[in-house]
Length: 284
Image (cartoon, rainbow, N blue to C red):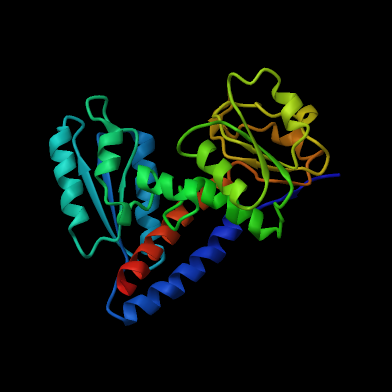
C-alpha cells in the first residue's frame, strides 16, 4: 500500500480562491483587509517568509504593509510601532516575524499585539480561547493541519492522535485542536521514553520537532494519517521534513510531502485569519 498524498499546494489554492471571493465582497462594502508584517533585523530565512506573506496578501486582494527595521531597534520602539498598528483602523492583522534579536523580549512584543489583530494566534488571549473552546485566532500551522484532515473527510472522533512536539506554535495548539474534534490525544517529546510504542498506537501522527527522520516506517501503524510539519535539510541541501517520507509512505494511508504539504497551508491560514479579523471588525 502506498499512501495518498495530501497536497498542500492544491488545497491552499482552493482556500485562497475562497478568500479572494470574500475579499471582493468586503471591498464592495468599502473595507480592504489589511495585514501589517514587522521585520526586525536581516535574518535571511525571515526575509523569505515575510516576502511570501506579502505576496500572498497581494494574490488575494488584501492590503499589506511591510515594516523593516534594523537589528539594533530598541524594544521600546518596537512596542510603540505595534501599539500604533493596534490603533490603525486599516490594519486587521499584525504579525511580528520571529525570531527577534536577542535584546528584545519576544513574548512582551506578542502580548502587546491586540488579541483582535493577533492573526498569528500567539497571544495568551488566543491561546486561552483555544484552551476553553471560545472563538479566537488559531495558530496558522496547526490550523492548516486541521484543514488538511478536513480535506480528506477524516473523522477524528474516537481516533488516537499522537503529536510529536510540544511547542507553543505547533505542538500544544495542535493537541488542543485535535481534542476539540473528539480525538484521544497523546503528546510526545524529548523526554518520552518509548516514542515508537506511542506512535504505533496512533491513527493520526503529527510530527513537529524539526528533526530529520524522527518518524520511520517501523513506527507507523498501517493506514495511519501522517502530517509532517518539520522543515529540515538533507546533507545535499534538499528540503525535507521530520518523517522518513520514502519509507513511511509505503505504510501510511495518507501523508503530507515536504515541500508542498503543510508549509503552503501556514501562509494560507494567515490569510484566512486576517480576512476573518476584517469581517469581524466590520460586523462589530
